[in-house]
Structures are given as C-alpha cells and as structure tokens.
Length: 279
Length: 267
Image 1 (cartoon, rainbow over the protein chains, first blue to last red):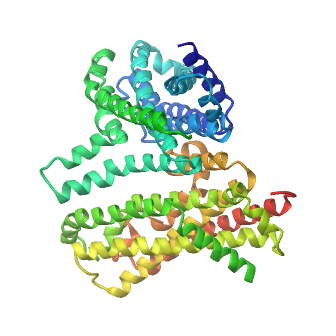
Image 2 (image 1 turned 90 degrees about the vertical axis):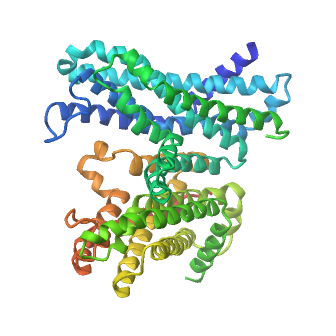
Image 3 (image 1 turned 90 degrees about the horizontal axis):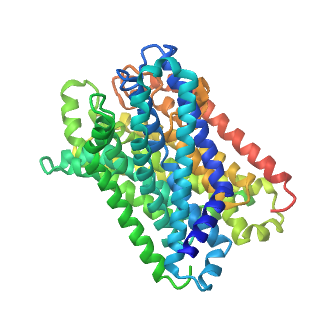
C-alpha cells in the first residue's frame, strides 16, 4: 500500500509539472472563464433572444452550465491526463526503471491510476470553484434565491463530471498502453471523441433509417458517452421539478453504464500492462 | 524548385504509410455507406417538396462528420510532420544537403496539401457515388461536377490552412508531444468548443468558421452550395471573400513557419 501511495503521489506531482497538461488546462480555463461571462451576458439581456437553459430555476441553470461545460466540453481533460500518465514515463524511461525495482507491477498501475484520478478530481474541483466564484461575483443577485438548489446539486454534478471524464481518461490510458508511439496514441484518443460524436448524430440517425424498428438508433446513443450525456442524462439530471437526490437517482442507469465502460477500459489496461514484458 | 518537388514527393510517400490513414479511411467508408443508405430515405422525402436536385443535398447530411475527420487528419499530419523528422534524426541528414530551409518547409506543406487534395477528392467522390447508388443519379451532371469540385477545393483549402497552422506549432516546439497536445487543443477550440465565446466577433477568422461560411455564405435558401435552386455564381460571389481570407491565412501561417524555421541555428 505504501508503494502505491508513493507512486500515486509522484504521478500527481508529475502531472502538475507536465507542460502538455498545463497547456491544455490553461486553454480550457480560458474557455471556462468565457462561459461564465457568456452566462452573465445572457442574464443581463446583452444577447437578445438568448436565455440560459433551465432558466425557471437559476440555481439549476448555473449547475447545468458547470455540468455541461466540464463534462461535454471537458473530455479534453480526461484525454490529456490519460495520455500523459503513460507518455511522460515512456519517454523518460522511468517506467522501465520502475519495473526493475522490487515493486509489484499492479502496484505501479494502481499508483498511476490513483494519482491521475486524484489529479483529475483536483482539476475538476478547481474549475468548479472558479465557476462558483464567478457566478457569485457576477450573477449573485439572480442566483441568491436559488443558492440552495445550486449547492445541493453541485456534489452530484462533481460526481458525474468525474465519472464522465474518467471514461475518456481510461480509454486514453488503454490506447497509450497499447501503442508505443505516444503522439499517435494521443491522435487516436482524439479520434475516440470524434467517434463518440458521430455515433449519436450521424450513425444513430442513419442506422435508424436503414434498419427501422430494431432500436439501433437508441443503442448507438447509449454506446456514445456524449450521446448519453446530451440526450439521456441532461434532461433528467437538470429537471427543475426534481430535488438534487431524486434527479441523481433518475440518471443512475446511465451513470452505471458509464462506470461499466470505465471498469472495462481499466481492466483491459491492467491486462495490457501486466502482460507486457517491455514497456 | 526541384528540391521542393523532391521534398513534397517524399512527404507524400511518407504520409501514405502513416498508420492514421487506414483508420481514417475505414471511418470514411462507414460514414459514406451509412450516409448513402440511411440518407436516401430523407432525400426521397426532400425531393417531394424541393425544385432543385435533392441528390446534392445529400452532401449536406454528412457535411459535419466528413469535414471534421478530414480536418483532424490534416491537423495531425501537419503537426507531426517536422517533429517526427526531428525525433528520428532524418532532418539532420537533410539539412546538411544543399537545401534551403524554406524549401524544406514549402516542400512538406506541398506534399501534405497534395495528399489532402487527393484524399478529399476520393472521400467526396465515394460519398457521392454511394448516394447515387442508393438514391439516384444527378439531374444535371455538369451542375453536380461543378458543385462537387467546388466542395473538394474548399475542403482542401481549409485542410491546407490547418496544415500550415499546425506545421507552425511543429516549428515552434521541438517536443512532439507538446505539439500534438497543442493540435488537440486546437481541434477542441475550433471544432468542439464555442470559440465565439472566447473570441467574440473575431471567431469569424478561425479556419473552421471561414470554411463553414464559405460553404454556407448565407442562411436562406438553405445549404446554397448544395442547393441547385441557388445559382452557382450567386453562391460563389458570396463565398469568395471567405475563401480569400482563408487563403491569406494559409499563406500567413506558412510564411511565419518558414521565417521561424529559417532563423533556427540548430534543428
């Protein structure tokens, strides 16, 4: 257990000092800040005709902004952390050095996964803190009557974002372990996002036309994390007539499906890592 | 000029063996088949109320998926082109030859752009052929060829612009992973995030927005490039300013890339 924690701590520090990760996280931070400002502009009526989604409850409208931005648009966090977990070690040959030390292989991968998940949680927490501060500073008056709604849903929003981005983290981790060329692994991880997008837009619609009545369109949406998020989770999770806990219970099937995806991708990563002689 | 041609030819051949190509090729085949077979149903309904050629509207159905995958491929080919040669050391050998650094960058750009032109032509022809197979032939072959050729040229110009931009990333940083992550961030910025929230009205200048505006320079009538009720000339006149800006951007990125690469003392 001690070695797992040591490796996890090192992984966390490595990710924090990784230039690639910082580049992506700063770019995403700019996007998050622009989103907060857009929300503020819409509330002030500076964008004629625009209204925030779920505007009947401003607390939930704000939650929805956090939830959708950090999950749907935040897949990039999962990809870069998943890829960097393996690539930096491979390039620096640290993984090969670690493997010849008296440390179990499963301790190495457990430590690395634990460290990267802790880092991801820290990053999501940081962005949520930025969001909350921004909302309170800029939209405090509009949000004040709904603060309880906002804060009560926030832990569940955090949990969902964590699971959603971990899906992409685990897929990227698996690809990075399977492919030696780390630049190519990152390219393939980006393609995974593209495939997830076309699955619920083009593929589901056209397959429904080709073979109507078989439910293939719904299957494609369910297999796509982005389709699941947009078409299945968001309308239920942000339902303004439900309380925070009930809203979370209503998305439990989709939440478990995403967890199963993570378990499968992580299990495959374990198998690949344990069976490879040379990394 | 001969050296530029040689570098371009070498780059073209290198790209052909790059493992990303068969993967993207397979995705294109799936999109083309699904769009052809699944979209035919919608085109039949569309034909009942349109006076134009419904077949061409089929390109509009797969517009997003096709454009995005071709652009993603162009981005990564452009980004990794110079860093890969730095990584495997072949650039050191090349630059000891009587070769101008600017010819090296131009050659690489020409090779990649040539490849993307060929790839886009194949992609759009294949999508068109499958639509013809599942739906019907064009009402006017000449109109079909004109508009398809325009679509291929615009998509290739857009791909060349992102190649030039991402080659610039490859010139600026010597670390291939940093370059790849910068390119990935660019894809999210221009294709997935709402970049108008960050750039405001300046978002019109990003390659993806310019590409979209060149295809759809006005909202009504819908899909002007693929809508035969809109005269080709009318669409072209409206799209020309956006195409001109896209071309200028491409030149600008390329010139900056050449300038920075030529100033480097080492590789």
